[in-house]
Image (tube, rainbow, N blue to C red; front, side, top):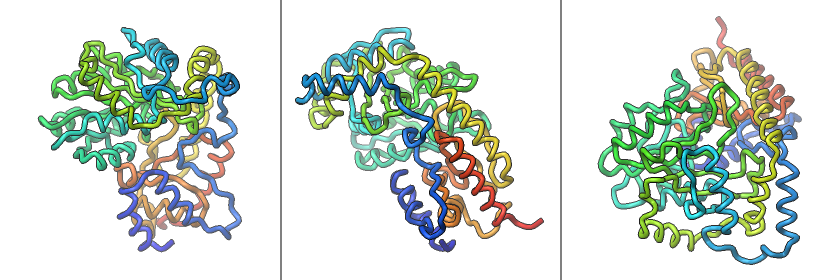
Length: 412
């Protein structure tokens, strides 16, 4: 792919989803190269042989399906037993108890994101989003006519929220700020203290916090995962999550939208009724998948969950080790959670590479390796690498990336 074409892609990638960008990269691969495609761009752990769901989850779905009790419609807000199981699961890490009325079952976390923004939309509203972040928020906000304002995450501080920037950006039309913890795309995990500071800042600004915790509990460093809902007594929190990552079942599309608000803002009858009416418009997950949730949560062995985190720690270490061998790439902070990391691209060491988009499209064409340009996530001249992959794929993909970078290295 010529550099000019890559520059054209720079203009288009900011307006499409990650899946759309990855599709463009796949189209750019040279099918005649004879090289197998190594994708380190998509956050789907089930595509790797080292990540498989537990038999408990599979059996729970089979049991629900074979019972023939769950072939009809479920309540639009979710099955009562599903809502209760999710409330109990999330309450394990909170200083208060959620009730089933606080939980609304969604078709994956993506639908939960759209519900959150739909509930907050009003004329003139704006929302504060992290940069880098997850592009679905921008897309949903555009459909809801919500203005987006980006605050920076600080790579030299473990990708913490720039709270000074948050305060400078917010005004009387700001309806919420979004945090993603553990972080996608950065691989960070926020400390308890930083979450408290976020809550206090949001309370000062009179905005609620949307806590995207789709990677909840996928923390394998020295910082344990703490849910934002722990500070629901300071500021109202909308907690968004799903089964997809922790149980390695993204295709099951089972997510949740939870009002973590013990002080009661979301218990206002008018607010509750509005949420329920909106869910009447939506199609939730399959009823038999919902019915399996209580058994999945109750019977999953802790050893399965620990093994996944151990594997992520190992693959993250491989990723960081191989990146350390490539002079033009640098990890600003080793990942402590989730399944992806941001890597700094030093263009001054490369010739004939104009930016991160150009880098990723040429890498796809010449080496059949897919990684995500940082521009797609709001951060120019960085790339996102997914380490939820088989070790052999990481070794091969980053080995080819090393060869690619050698070919384009400036002579000194």
